[in-house]
Amino acid sequence: MIAMQVREFVEADWPHVWPIVREVIQAEETFTYDPAMTAEQARDTWVVRPPGVTAVAVEGHRTIGTAHMQTNRAGRGSHVSTASFMVASDARGRRVGEALCRYALDWARSRGYAGMQFNAVVETNHAAVNLYQRLGFQIVGTVPGAFDHPKFGRVGLHVMYIEL
Image 1: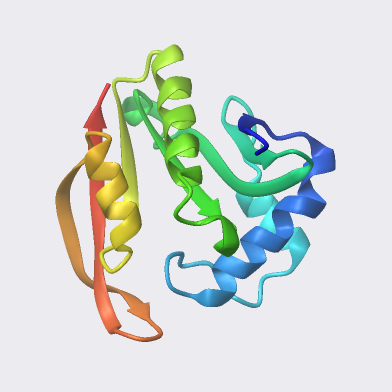
Image 2: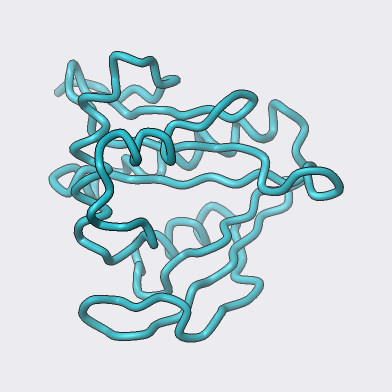
């Protein structure tokens, strides 16, 4: 078995990250991104600029997940970070999301952030909600009906937070 590694994204990773991003956004179940987004539009949205970081989870030569992390808000809110995660469908249930989330938390702690806030976790994404809670995040609020899920209709978006 090949060990999974999480590392910082490099430009040569995009052709391997794009299929994951495309798959997730076209499913329309967890992100509010336009499912018709082009690769270029997706890259501009997903690959964050420094001091933020984009990361990949790889197994051998195969990219199986991606994340990005950055400051949640500018100015007086810049002490709180945020992050987002996407995992290839055939790699789900193998702790890829957990590895990416732990990487993001380590990144935030190493830069002195006071906390990490997730602004929009779809409440029907039980795997993600359960993972984040297991890692110490709390649901601090839910915006009712803020996400139009293709199967469940309008469902809530959780705001989740962990103090670092």
